[in-house]
Length: 114
Length: 112
Figure 1 (cartoon, one colour):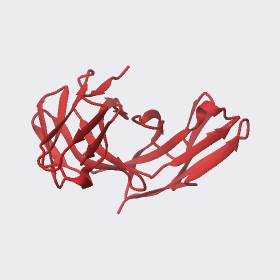
Figure 2 (tube, helix red, strand yellow; figure 1 turned 90 degrees about the horizontal axis):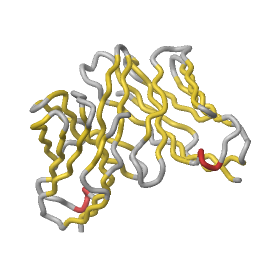
Figure 3 (tube, helix red, strand yellow; figure 1 turned 60 degrees about the horizontal axis):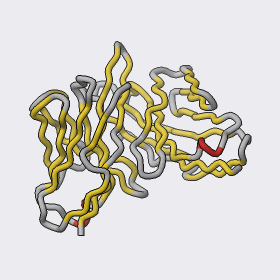
Figure 4 (cartoon, chains in turn brown, yellow; figure 1 turned 135 degrees about the vertical axis):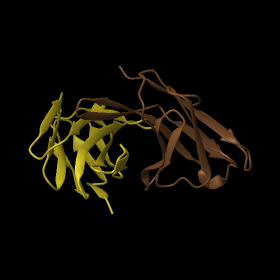
């Protein structure tokens, strides 16, 4: 079974703080993703990575950065947290098997910025 | 612009009352269509991937089908434990990446 873990389930931070969210997968997948999920807006892609040290912006990268120093680990960084970044953050890892593609998600981190 | 629309937004069913959820899409080229189940406060759980029109996949009480414009998730004789939000997502071909575009989901409630 694919396992994707995220460092925290719940996190409360203050405005202006630097925030690190970490995601680890145990299946040697090359592609990993960070989404945020908000009521009425659904899941939106922030950043993704297709290999170590490689990254691409998603639909809403502003205010975020990412780091992928090792294949199994993909970090999302909020450089200076703001209240509008209060959200559920979801990490995903992609399994590719022949012609099939499946994204597997972690349990999520609910971040509150006060 | 690629779009994914799910309907209805919410659905209440009596236990045993079969129904279908709809996912319509407008994309330049479909590489795959994905269905997920999400329980409150948790990450989405992968259910199915469909790749071509006419394809069908089944898992317990769930059956997913795909046409050139939409996908249906059929729920046969649902039970209360099937209550969840069901998400549909598409992956566009030729994009050079594997990113998904999600619909906003259908919240299913199954009443005992």
